[in-house]
Image 1 (cartoon, rainbow, N blue to C red):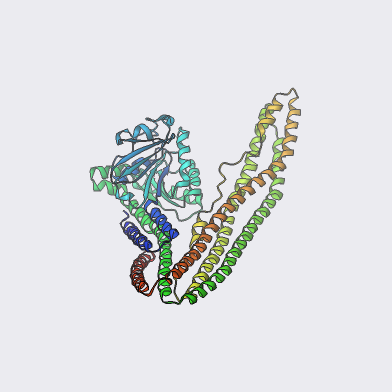
Image 2 (spheres, rainbow, N blue to C red):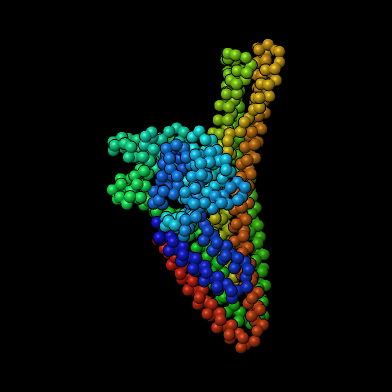
Length: 591
């Protein structure tokens, strides 16, 4: 499934291994550590492809059909209750991770005892998750195929387990059926998924239940409502019969497999995992590898230069380099001040919008509150308070939810613009550092720009969770329901108390929302700035180390210098060979 990706992935790992052997000639712990971290990242990088949907939509059957075996339990009742992660392994191995931290190895036949409602009702066994190593080519290259409990069943813990896993999802297979077509509750769940997942494959299962005309009508309806719900006119729905797909795979029946539409879905997934997921993952790692190799090439070139350069001349150039480095450090600090000012400007924008919210929405909320308070409400104080509670929840909570939704997109755009400017300035500083070194020592050092702005922008979200509860109505209800005051007077006291609290609560929650936005912006900014500054400092440290080693080489005798030149020429030859391979790989990824 990922043949191209696997080949490129392996080629990069082999190049990193060669770079690691080259690093043995250079006593640079930071360089070696960076190489090892990059190798670990490539070897262990897990891409979570997660199957999501309501209960009994055929999620486990789809997973089994993709893996060509009855690995996961299937039944006609809500079944899966535990998140099950399936990754590649040369041999099948199933591990149950308990909440206590203990791991248990089990056979496939016992899987039902831990991952189903039937075998593990309400998760009485305390299973955290199940991880399965399985020898399928579809899982090679870091792909983890994950089956989740269905949402919307009577088992609330299943829904909670799926929601808890959403932040870890890289791409989703969102299943619903043709009969009935997608429901309102599924659209609500899809809205929650969309907050966390950029790439969603929409799959309408059980197409074998309907004839062609009814199937087309059902899919057209689902397509229309999904596009309306997401505001996206480019939704593609993939038809599927997971049942026929599994039967076709197990019975080796090409007609059933073709009728299931699974081959078309697999082709789409293969294209995505090969050309998008794989490309993004490899481009990032390749960029880091080429930067490390450029440092290595510069160090070898500088060492060769040092062998034939008089020590006095070399020391003078080092003094000039340190002076330039001080100037570059000031530019780096100025860049940080610029970003600080821009973040403050973004928060001023938040304050301005919150003030507008107070001025426009508070009078409207008071008007709605007064109208509700004046309307007749049968029953005692309890019913009266419940009526006002409904008005407040509908008015205030929806007002803040809508405001947050509107501001998220605007603030994301602002942060994207600012972080792009910061990233450009950081790249310019690194380029300046490289140019200074190249001119001083007559060595061309290749420069690779950081693309951190892209990843930072696309992963910047404000997820506020459940709507906050803005009023403590229970206290008012308990007090007034226990008094002997006439109902009309009790109602009046409730009304006066809540009306007085309304502006206070709006102000308090404006502050709460502002604090949340501020925290998230600051956290994103600090992480983003640290990553870029680390790249600047690493470049400077690499050049400084090469200069120190160059000076040490000047202290050896002429015979040793000749041998050093031969060793350095051999190192440079190997560096250029790896550089050529990385260049070829870069060409493949951009073609």
